[in-house]
Length: 171
Image (tube, rainbow, N blue to C red; front, side):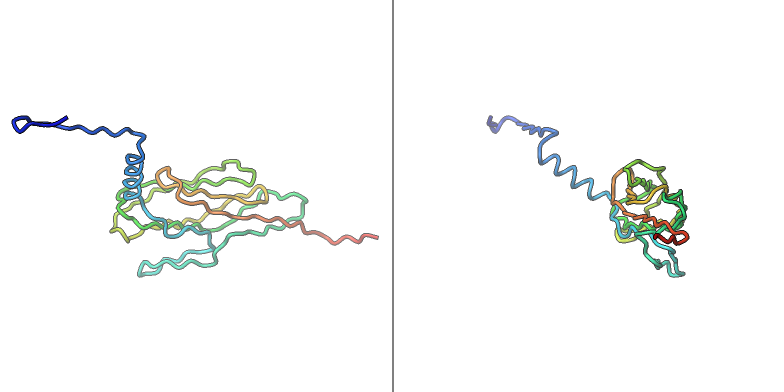
């Protein structure tokens, strides 16, 4: 189709939703408005100094549980979880959800925390929460970290069980 000098021509180009260019553009835009994970760790203690600097004390990725029974009984594991983001272009109230899964892949109760992102691109926001986690069995637990329903990272926590008791003499 061509236009003559005396005519006004309008060309309309349509892109299909499933086109690679449209998908790339959506992914690029989604990436721009997302926070960036800085830290995700289990630890014994988090100190927030007067200058607002965090110190992480005794990073944990394994608990060794001892007991008198052949099978592990439910055990409370006290630890802190620290999840920190840099804002990027993300602003306003966001929802951080931590969703644990047991060694047999069953979903355990989630923990949800509101977070407020209000700083510059490089300013961060950190959640430091005391957790009293009940481990019902030994094995590898996974803690999926979601920000606004999007999986950001997965954190592993190993629970090992050792039966201890009176020594027996075999003859």
